[in-house]
Amino acid sequence: MSATLPSDLTDLDATALSAAIHARQLSCVEVMQAYLARIHRLNPRAVAMVNLAPDDTLLAQAAECDAELARGHSRGWLHGLPQAIKDASNSVGFPTTFGSPLLLRHMPTEDNLMTARMKAAGCIVIGKTNMPEFGLGSHTFNTPFGATLNAWDPAVSAGGSSGGAAVALALRLLPVADGSDFMGSLRNPAGWNHVFGFRPSQGRVPFFPVPDVWVNQLGTEGPMARSVRDLARLLATQAGPDPRTPLALTEPVDEIAAVAQFAGRPEAAQSLKGLRIGWLGDLGGHLPCEDGILAGLAAYLQTAQAAGAQVEPTTLGCDLDAVWHAWLMWRRALVGPRVAPMLQANPACRAQIKPEVLWEHDNALGLSYMDFQRAAVVRSSFLQHMVQQFERFDVLALPTAQVWPFPVGERWPQQIAGRAMDTYHRWMECTLYATFAGLPALSIPAGFHANGRWPLGLQLMGRPRGDAALLRVAAGFEAIAPALMAQRPSIALA
Image (cartoon, rainbow, N blue to C red):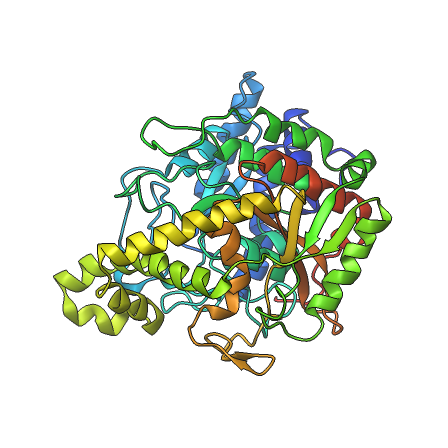
């Protein structure tokens, strides 16, 4: 091992690990051993990953990767790096359970498109990352595997639904991670675990296989990382069109990949000079927020102003209640059918499905096509409204979450700042705007609660299809706050 490398290889981000492996400073076996040692020490309590492959199997795969390099062949930049796939996505050889006791033996026969692309780039799949049952509710707990604990404070929620991925990253159990995002599922857990989570533009990372490639287009897969350069490289790996996904974006990924060369350098701070940031805050009181969140983010934005950005408070100026109700229609129409086949085949299985999933399903039963069409019209109008915002601003900023991480034993916040939540997901309302308009959005580490244990995330939304530009902005924020970005959990989960 080179003397220039850290004693703990998991301190390196994926880009640095890849460079060391390809320079033959590190072997793939050494990297796998380092990660497995950390996984065995921390994962039994953290429950970030589930259904892990046996060590000997993984070490044999790593040895084969080393042999390939010795023959002069590399599969790609992820060659030999361990990767765990979110338990909502298929990886052949591992069950895809969706966190449900009904699917513990569900063995897929083909990889998800995203998984296949990461494997083609050389990763070794070691298992799956934990998620809430059927991905619903931004709090990662389920009956088969239990709760994933926040990397910074094991007494509070890790967020979700990509909570396992975020915790695995923060605890350095994985070099990079994938996830998916319907209502903040990449952004919320990233914010609560002090990592980056990127929701791509709709169609940038196409879903396949799925039963419906036309209408069910609110969710998307995407990357999570500890550095912006890793975030850009993984997104460039996941992204791109496929003939089986007719609504996928067809633009090449070159601009996204180029951000990986730009990020991580001091000059990346130049991307903030003259940047016009629209600070949405709590949307004029529409979004209740717990104490300290808005003040913490406003203080963080002052560092961007010092670097040359222009920050202007603004509101969306549209009927946000109408947007919320249209969102509910879309969400119910797309989420309810997830469990419909199981309930039709065996009505008794209701007892094994969590109440929030049943609530979505049962409410979906009463929807008509006209309900859906009316919601589609509101959604279309909302997109046009959001496009207009980017005539004034380059990015829009608001909280990643309206609350601090809540106790792990609670299902969801019942109230925020004295305002009762009327659904199990109303507390996540700040994340729906990017989703509903199909915009790229990400969570950036932005600070901590006064107790020093609960991370705070800043959510940035970019122009339609402006993924590369938004990543460059993220690189600027990363460059102006190196000490903040370098902070790591001090809470021992062992």
